[in-house]
Length: 220
Image 1: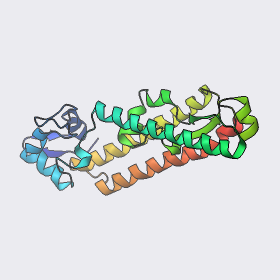
Image 2 (image 1 turned 180 degrees about the horizontal axis):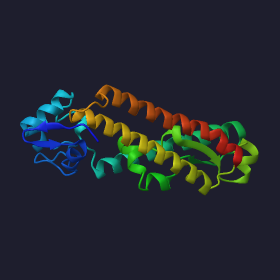
Image 3 (image 1 turned 45 degrees about the horizontal axis):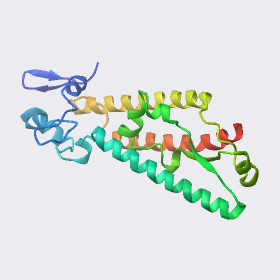
Image 4 (image 1 turned 120 degrees about the vertical axis):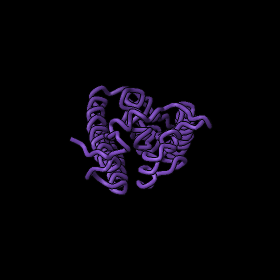
């Protein structure tokens, strides 16, 4: 079904090559997508270099759980400061404001089985502006500032966004597999084509969330 490239006497499909990617640190303490031992293999290492990769490229360095914890904490702190600024500016204009952020792709999705696709593959963080709407936490803010009331969780929206994320993830995995066909000697897509598809998909996610914001506000 998929193209194959011969390494010595053994054939490796991309699926087989992915099995040899291990999310554990190499001897130098760095966790790589393609581990040091693969780069030391004269056949596989040569193939990876031909595709434009190098063992210490940023693309080949995997973030650790601690890296992501720090990344999320920093993004959440930025959101806290933006919320404080928003409330301060709106209070200066209207005399009072108590607003809180609402995530279009909500926390349950980021924490669920598809969350890693968004933050690890698409390099998106849910606390950033693209995914945030400021909504009123009390009736006085709604009255004075004209902000819709913060609803807490919206199960129907969560379901819609979950379905979107699943479709996006499927498309990404298909593009990755097509790139993998090329990586193993078949007629798939080039690295440049894969990166272009990945960036287009990332932008589509951002644009879809932007289009959902007015719809979400209109239904609150």
